[in-house]
Length: 243
Length: 183
Image (cartoon, rainbow over all chains, first blue to last red; front, side, top):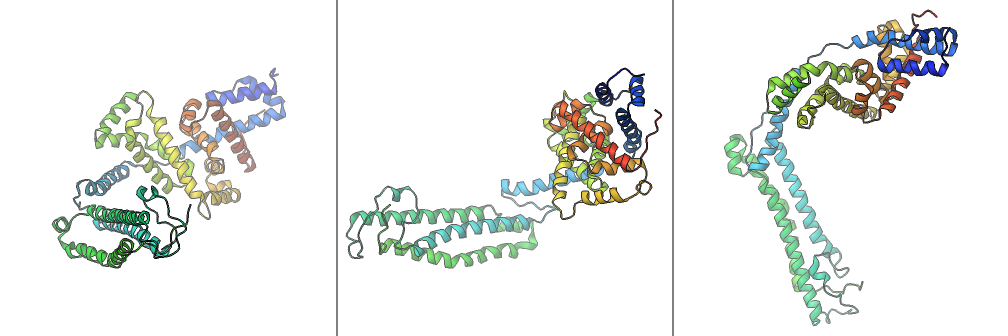
């Protein structure tokens, strides 16, 4: 007869599982006289009988070749992406076409430049005479003129003249930043000469994008020039509202 | 073995391809076994096992040479499996749904015996229970080591292990697997 409680039976059964030890005879004895613990015991045996066959059923595999090939591939790929950015020299990679990352950089630089130019141009034209254009610190240091409603009164106002002049300077700064962004974007690209050295067959294709890009920027440049001229020559027809 | 592993790791860090190959060959059985039991499909398991080794090589410098290598690489593999399962769960009809359906409908004989029956039942478990069960019964790690791998206290691991066993045993019983016991 067993002289352990059901709670003790369960605890010792779990201990046997955790320590991977064989069951004590007293547990089997208790299981034979207690239906609830007998069910736990059956579950234990059922599983212990299934596990060895399950454990052995893992098929053999040889991953070494595949892992090392992927490791070498990754190493080559990381070199082909990083090296041009570091040395500004194109690398002929057998696994990735150089044109892929170049096109990506061109489009990112172009998108950034367009965004900046659009912001510069669209804001003053849309809000002419409305809210003060967003610019850097110099403008914010000046008080906004109030209650002047006639165009004739504005040029004679010295404070407003200063405001207009500084607004123009701020726009010029922004334009400079836009130009810098474009230059930065194109500087990341290898020069046409280097490209010609590396990939002789791609010379004309690699040069053509510069001309296309300049053509796309022409109308924006014209608009920017007009906007700057307008700002430097004429003050806004209506003063900004007081804040 | 641990000293051996340390030497292999040092050489691998220095770029020795032969040492990397030794490391893969030594642990591919454990890593692939874990991935296969976690994912249920051989192709997926091979991919994730390869990913695990690549991850391990990338962070080989972070391995503590005073600790065993096997739990460390199994922890990486378990994480990769978890990520893979999360991605797979987002698919319209996940593989686990198909497995669940198959596990309920197929007969033991058609599944290839009690081992495959247990395998099917395993795929129906919660991921934590499954990982715990596999690491304990297939990889034969201790509850302490499993706790380190899964980032849980030992007590939690024991609880998960016993719950996993209970659910699996219930499944086997429902499926007509009888124990060979005499009361």
